[in-house]
Every structure is written in structure tokens, then in C-alpha cells.
Image 1: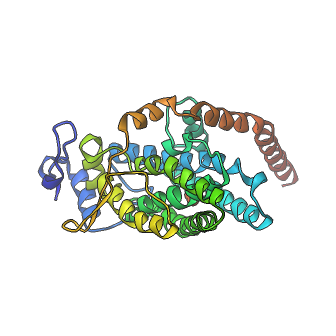
Image 2: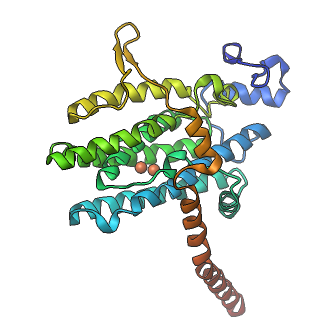
Image 3: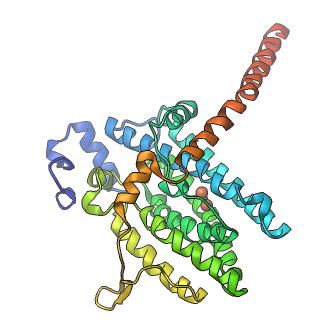
Amino acid sequence: MYAQLVKTDSDRVRGLDEMSAEERAFQERIDRGEKIEPKEWMPEGYRKTLIRQIGQHAHSEIVGQLPEGNWITRAPTLERKAILLAKVQDEAGHGLYLYCAAETLGVSRDELIELLHAGKMKYSSIFNYPTLTWADIGAVGWLVDGAAIMNQVPLQRTSFGPYSRAMIRICKEESFHQRQGYDIMMKMAKGSPAQKAMAQDALNRFWYPALMMFGPSDKDSVHSAQSMAWKIKINTNDELRQKFVDQTVPQAHYLGLTVPDPDLKWNEEKGGYDFSEPDWSEFFDVIAGNGPCNTERLNARVKAWEDGRWFREALVAHADKRAAARIAAE
Ligand SMILES: [Fe+2]
Ligand SMILES: [Fe+2]
């Protein structure tokens, strides 16, 4: 299977005959569908790639709370407020499972957070876009959590045990998130003309950023082939993006909304939609730190971390005191 995955020289997956005995045994376990557990031998590249991927995923869950947290106090009804609050809390939980999964690879949560705050680790570019209206909360749940599910469902079968198990629970919660988003969109799209216009505007602004969530086109994506051989990645970016479009377009039609792509067309032969690629220069620009909210998001995270410092220190001091008291009593 590796031969088919070879793409370019710089992103070449080595054949079994080029591997050491340890590496070969490792690859064979993955090919048999076995899970790799934290204490077991793994190539350094596998460990590093997973730390980067799981860490980035954890950061995305945490930073992803910010655009939605922005609307908790302004949700239109008590019920919507309670639902949104529960959803944002779920995202915090997802972040914590994922930091724990990364910790099993030998990196602490504090180290990962420091890397994020120093701008040395990324989070999903989608969270650098603002949520301007209540309809945006609908669009985020529908499209952003929808794209997240598309990315994460295959990861339930990923080769690293703790990551795959975290994904199983996370995916269950994500499907609730997507439904709550779609439910908001239904209310808005079937509401007054002004509400429908807000829903359409939210779709217009979030459509392409949602398509960008699957990452660059396969031809420009680095690390893919090796990650697929290691089953850290199960589908290519373009495969997942196509699946997302095919699933989402009929949902937009049901809402009576228009997908902002004049070239969107059903292609009978391929059994999917033809659609326009996002503007990749915008994607790389946002990744590079120049999106509308990059600075605001990072500042909010750094402030939360600094504001919580006294509390973390107090917890440690309290634990130390109790331990000292226990020793003195023995
Ligand atoms: Fe999540
Ligand atoms: Fe979510």
C-alpha cells in the first residue's frame, strides 16, 4: 500500500524493506489495524506528528470557545442560552481530553499552551473569523461543527489508542452541536425577511472558511502520505471536502438558502457536486496570523492563562501543604 501513497521525493513514504526491524514491526501492527498505546515503541516522527496534530486539535477546541462565548450573554432566549452554554462547555471538555491524549506522548499541557501562546503552535484558522450576528452561531454549529465531524469521524479509527478513544466521545457531542446550529438556522431561515437575510449573510461569510477547514488541496498538502501510512490521517483533505459539500448543499437547499458559489453544480458522473475552491491565499494569510481576529483570540487566551495563574499556584500550594501534613502525621 505504501507505493500508492508515494507522492513526491520530499514526502516519500519508505517501503518496508528500507525500514529497521523495529519500524517494520510497528508498521505491520498498524497495517493489521492494531492500536498503538502510549508506553509502546513508536518512531520519533510518529510521536512528533501526533503531538502536533493532537495539540493543534486541543488548541482549536479551546480557542473555538471564544467566537461562541461572545454570544452567550446575547442569546435570544433562556433556552438558547442554556443550549449554547452547554455546547461551549463541551468544547472545553474536548480540549481537556485531547491535552490528556497528548500528555501520554510525553508533552505536558503547560508546554503545549506555552507553545500556543508563543505563536509556535496553530489552531484551526476558522476561529479567526468574527461572529457578527446571532445567525453566525447557527452557521458555526451547522458548518464548523459539521466540518469538524467530517474530519473527526474517520479519526475514531486512527492508530493511536488514546486519540481514537477521545474521538469516539467527542464525535457524539459534535453531532449535538451540529444539530443545535442547524436548528438555529431553521428558525432564522424560516423567520421574517430580516432574519432570513441574516441567515443568508452568515452562510455567505462562513461557507469558504468552512471549506478551508479541511486544509489545503491534496497537491499542496505536506506530510499527508506518511500520516496516511501511519493511519494518523485516514482520508485526504480533498476527499473530506467533497464529502462535506455533498452533505451540506442539500441542507442549504432545505433552508431555502443559496450557497455563495455560482459554479456549484451537481455532477452526475462523479455522483457529487462540482464547486469552487476557497481562496487559498486568504487561508495562508489567516494561518500566518493576519486573519480578522488572530490577535484578539491569542490575547484572550494569554489573558485567561495569566489571570488564572494565582489559582493554579494556590492549588499546588494547597496540595503541598496537605502532603506535608500527611507526612507529619505518619
Ligand atoms: Fe469540539
Ligand atoms: Fe463542537
